[in-house]
Image (cartoon, rainbow, N blue to C red; front, side):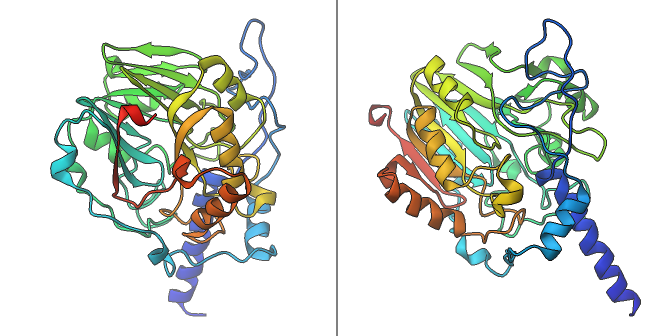
Length: 360
């Protein structure tokens, strides 16, 4: 075996290890102190309606290398993902409509009457701590990120590398206010963001500004940026209340039949929900922390969304399903549940949708 082959094997295994930082899980302590919320532990946080499994790197490797599921070649099938040219001139202007621009994965530029919001911005080529290994974006970036309009707010769902990106934060700098779950403020401070530009929230906490209010809400997921910080920072979904329109950003989540119904019951209908549909295969391994399209539609109903848009698909090779499979499955499940295509739709990467307030 020559040196080139050995190096290739090592890099391939390293990429698998790095992928674990976005899709694997491990055990966490459930110990609590008195007078703390149920999702807090002595060392961090936990999920309320599942037992977080004790899975290690070896479980993941065994599943990927010896399991029955065949993993798609994402780079070869990248053409399944529709790509549009983002209209840079359009995003620089104000609009009386709610303008939704999908930049790929879970990154949206949301625009409403001069307010610009980014969700989980990922500007790097890899969802990884390394530039040479880890999940590589298999579709093009649809904008030079320096051409984004001035960003007022950034919401972060959790700290996995496909949702929290150092490249993006360094480029955005101290211009926006960052809304982040508990215990993530320290990471932003370490990366040069001023304390007064960071708002750290627990579930059900609200940060209110002149033109918008953000409420951190439950989701079913986990957090880690290394092998030694599992669930030490919180994960969250977000409700955004702008003047005249409301948005719910799911972040990354598995499904349970309690938390999302609680969100819908307590907060009432939401005009637009952004819900993940990818990262779900094989179900035996991904089910607890990543919804499939059927569960995404259940969340759409639970949070009482008037309209939903799919995300978390067609960008990074994180799981076994092919790039376009989540959208195909979404269409099948919509039909089964008798949900109109326009009520839960998918977008092309780089596409812009303008929603008139009277359509909600």
